Image 1 (tube, rainbow, N blue to C red):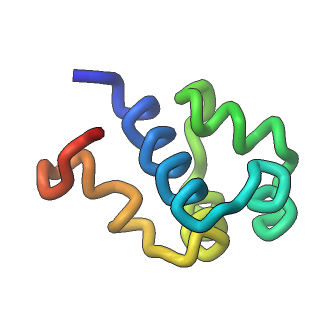
Image 2: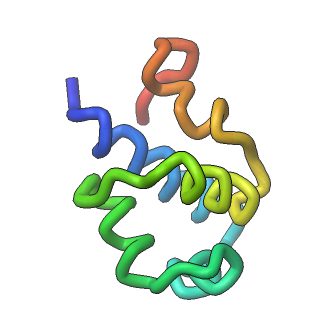
Length: 77
């Protein structure tokens, strides 16, 4: 099983791509740098709860939806 941060990164990327957003556009909407989004998507950064909330808002979803991969209710692609 992939590491938790990699799973979270995959969920972030999948939602971003579903919305048709670039990393740059998502970063702008959330008040982050594009490199931070890139590092999150690659599982290289561990976001704080406040940053997860900002991400979820920018991705038009909830933190619980982004983290479903951890409780087995959502399959990993």
